[in-house]
Amino acid sequence: MLAAQLVEFNKPYKIHQVSTPKSLGPHDVLLKTAVASLCHTDGMVQAGIMGTQLPCIASHEGTGTVVAIGTETTDFKKGDRVMAGLPRNRCGHCHDCLGPEDYRQYCTNISGHIGVTQDGAFAEYVVVDGRESCVIPEKVSFETAAPLACAGCTVFRGILQTELKKGETVALVGAGGGLGHLGCQFAKAMGLVVVGVDARDEGMALAKESGADVVVDARQQKEKVVEEVKKVTNGMGVYATVNVSDAENAAALSCAITKMHGTVIQIAQPTNVSVPFHELVFRDIRLKGSLISTRGEAKRMLDMVAEHNISVKTNPFFGLKEVPKLQELAHSGKMVGKGIIVVDEEEMKRVKAGKTAPT
Image (tube, rainbow, N blue to C red; front, side, top):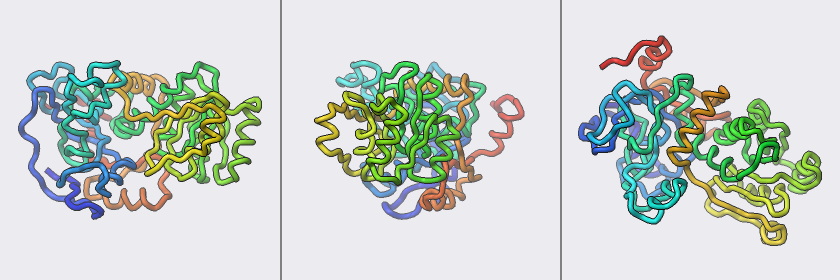
C-alpha cells in the first residue's frame, strides 16, 4: 500500500509502497482509509520529541471503512464507517485503566498511539483499536470526522472540563485555529456564551463565523485584551478559559481574562507553560491540563456534531502524494482550519451516492 512514512526525524515524509497490515490482534480493526488529517502533534512527532520509533506512518486523525476485524471485536462490522481512536492496547489493569472513565486515556502501559508511536492514517489502510474507535453517524461525513479524531475530541473534552453551566461565559484563546473554531461551535451547542481570542485576521474571522459572541484581537497589549473581555463580562472576566494556543504568552493571557477563582484548561503543548505568579496565586486561578477525550466523550461529540450540524473548516488535498503540499500550507501560517488528505476518493463518492460498501 502507499503510505507517507517518517523514516528520519526533521526530514520530509517518504511517500512510498509499504506492506499492507495483514495480522490483527483480537481487538483490532482494519480500516481502508478514506480521509486523514494533519495535526500540530504531527510536527512534534516529525521533530523527534514524542518517543517515536522509526519508521512510522504519520497522521493520528483518520477515518475509513471497516474491511476486517479482530476475533474479539464486537462493536463493528465490515462496511462500517469509523473514526479512528488514537490509543492502542491499553493495559486494562493500571490505576488509570481501573479509575473513572476519563482517566483511562492516560494509561502509561499502552502499546502506543496511531501516528505517534504506531503506524497511522497517512496510508491506504490503518489498524486501529476497536475499543477506542467510534462508528460515524450517518449525517457526519468522512471529511468532517477525520479532524474530529484528535482536534475535535481534544477541544470537546476541554470544554467539558470547564464544568460550566448553560448561559455562563467561556473564552477560547486561539479561537480561530483548527481546535479553536471547533471549540466555539461545541461551546455554543452547550449553551455557553463564547469569547473568542485570536491573533490573526483570518482566525478572528473564523471564530466569528464559528459562533463566537465576541471576538478580541490578541495582538493588542494584554491590558487592553483584559479590558475588552471585562467589558462584556460585567467587569469580572470569563468563568473559564480553554487555551489552544501555543504562543509564548497565551497561558498568561488565558489566566488574565479569567475571573477570580475561575478555571483555565490548558490544551496547547508549548515547551513551557508560563504564568506570572500574581495571575495564578493572587487571583486563585485553577490551571488544569487536558488531553484527548474518552471513547464515551468522543461518541457524545459525534452525536452533537450530527445534531447541531457542526462543521469543520477544511483545506482538502487529494491523494497521499499531496502530503508535502499540505504541510507547506500548514507551515506557511496562512492555513485557516484543518488540512486533510482525501486518501480514497472512490470511497467518498460511493458514500455520497448512498451505495453499499463492497464486501
